[in-house]
Image 1 (cartoon, chains in turn blue, cyan):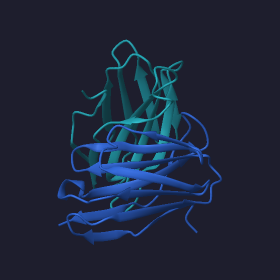
Image 2 (cartoon, helix red, strand yellow):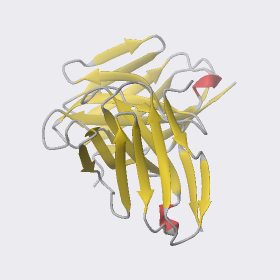
Image 3 (cartoon, helix red, strand yellow):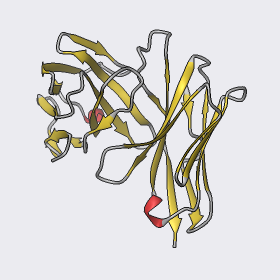
Length: 112
Length: 115
């Protein structure tokens, strides 16, 4: 079984809809991250969490919110989706600062 | 303002030859650097890393070189294999400066290794 899983893997939604992307990990890591990848722009950090009670904004948090339900679960929400949020979304985990991050397989989101 | 730059969007090499992927950075606080590899429909996977106290780190066919004075690092793959065809991301982090050790990624370089 994969250590970091993301659901759904693909999602098509309409402008204005609320959508939640979910991430689960079995690695036992405290740190979890949400990234967005756009063509030609690399990976950009949306939110990160160092433990259940610690949530931090990343480089591009506007229009997104997160919930850390447990050590193993970190969800990303788009409260009112817009077309420029069409992208690949990745969840990642790490054991400590500056340690290797382990990525999930990604969610491909299309906002019409 | 990009702190980590990969100026070559793509690179094509022949199987068996050397692949050299380059990365430049602007933040002098960065002291830890990583390379990730990404295949289509998969998440990035860690490849190799280097601390700023070193100028070279080697792992099998993969070697990363760090030139701190030039703020430049490179990934060498020798010999290149068709299975190395992927997008390679350079990433950097700083021990201090408010980034809390988070990774800053470059835009990636797509490597194609032709048989």
